[in-house]
Picture 1 (cartoon, helix red, strand yellow):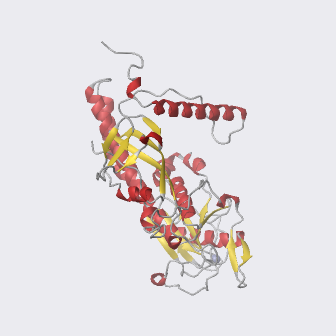
Picture 2 (cartoon, helix red, strand yellow):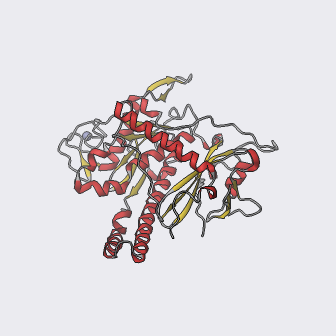
Picture 3 (cartoon, rainbow, N blue to C red):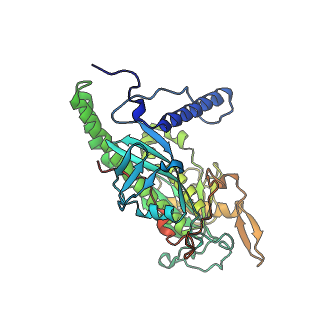
Length: 416
Ligand SMILES: [Zn+2]
């Protein structure tokens, strides 16, 4: 006989229900604000019931330090474990040693934990409040742009900040090359060719989704096929995310001043021929990563004006080529005869744009230091009440590991 009602209620931590209620409240507020116009952006619908499904779902637990019922990481000499209240010790896939060390030294504090199910795996995401990066891994706040400009035109000589130019590095996101970064004097500092993760995984994706639709609804075979399809989706997603993290890390590590163009991604996506490729390139996600990582390092990100024609302008003489099409991979200027890679030309223009649109501040040495007056520069970065947490024993300054913490991915998956 099928059991109905919430007979399993006492098996679940009370907090799970509380957090679900919090989410419902949030959803209702967003719905009402959207109706009354208090909320910008796309229209928000009425909150929907979650489906009980073997493949999806998630719950959240707040970390409580009282009563010893909190979330613990790597408990009892088991670095690959997370201990949750009421559930107990869970074996996880990733080593939590680094995270544990940060928590023990007071450099990180667990806020809450979200357990979710996806691609037939359980995932634990730990949300932390962490100390700032070690100053050695941050960009110097001032003077960066005022360093003596040395002509390092040769690409091989290009040091992280010694690429010449004005200190700004423009990042052009595209489909041909996923990202091309260049400084205002025409030096290419980074190029990432588009691996088109999705396109490569597409044949398999198609085959698996066909397999799902061929199976009888509600059958075990169909369930199995759904899981297989989900795994392929997850594989593609993970590969894409990996590439984006690598690029964003490299950019924020080497450049204190970054310029992105304001892409009307939603508008471009309505071009059906390009929409899948644009989704695959994940431009928005790249911008998001660059913005928050740059904030960690105390660097700056500005977004150029949406109408700034970064692709169609000659980066040498400023002449506009209105007839440039997407197919033209090389920018050839009719004014000065410049021949340059299309994406690099756009990146160089962006770098130059930033120089002209940031207000110079006197740094005392008579040189102008770029200061951003752009409101978008602040970005959606939340850096709420971070603590300057000294180590408990005081023997070492905080930030002993610094750089390693940058990539700390607190998301761990149990092996089970
Ligand atoms: Zn020109």
